[in-house]
Length: 358
Image (tube, rainbow, N blue to C red):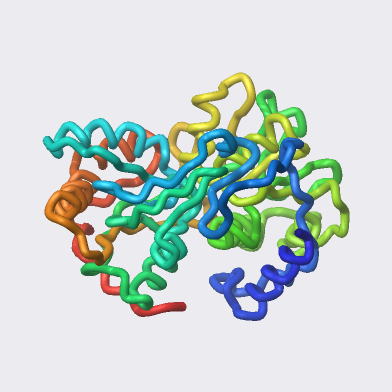
């Protein structure tokens, strides 16, 4: 597993994908994260392939065996706003007014390209062979969808994050106050898997470096030294990651695993604190917990929605179009805002022309 991390990180650095926004490039990552997850028995499975959402902290489905091959509606989406989707779905089903016999949506990292290429998604011993009609993902994934000819029209901006914060244990026993504290000896850091969640890993790692780089008031450590302390220490007890779904894995690592802290989207960390108030609290990186205002270098992420081409029947087509309309509605904007995201204003909902693959 470590060799896979090393190859993936080396490829990202050499391709220029990491930290390109900084006036001063961050050091190359030569370290490797230590896997942090619960011990489980890896039983032989019925199916294998990609995309595979099986993950030991929350997504094990060993005793449901089968294949589902027809769905009225499938949404393939980045999963970081799962708390808002949970509220959206009853609203959508009620508004659609027709009976959807079979529907599903994924809340993993964006897997839509592989899902479309392979006509399936796998969890444990269950294979879901339904093709997505709608996708929600960051721009880089939308560029890939356009390059492969999957898009039906141009994407529309759906929401923005409100930057990143640091998720820590309740009571903050390591007294973590800023990104600088992540470099201290004895502070253990959890991140997304750099191979399987490249986009999230880049965003968080880049924020650590950029925030430090812009913080000219700090003395005693440079941004390069901080970055090396987190990612290039050579220690197996400093940098940890899970397998593939960081919005489940990083909170698990902080609560029950080996980590003391993890940089996450504000809305993800807020949801973890809301659901598990005795386990977590947040350290803001600009503004306050109630009103985050990202400091310079704290990245903000855009998410887009798009229709997918396909040989859809009338019901699937109507379900697809109505879902997009519902997700771009004022009602869903209010849900997104409630959960700590910045919903797209009506004036910004025009289709966004993409510039091809990066």
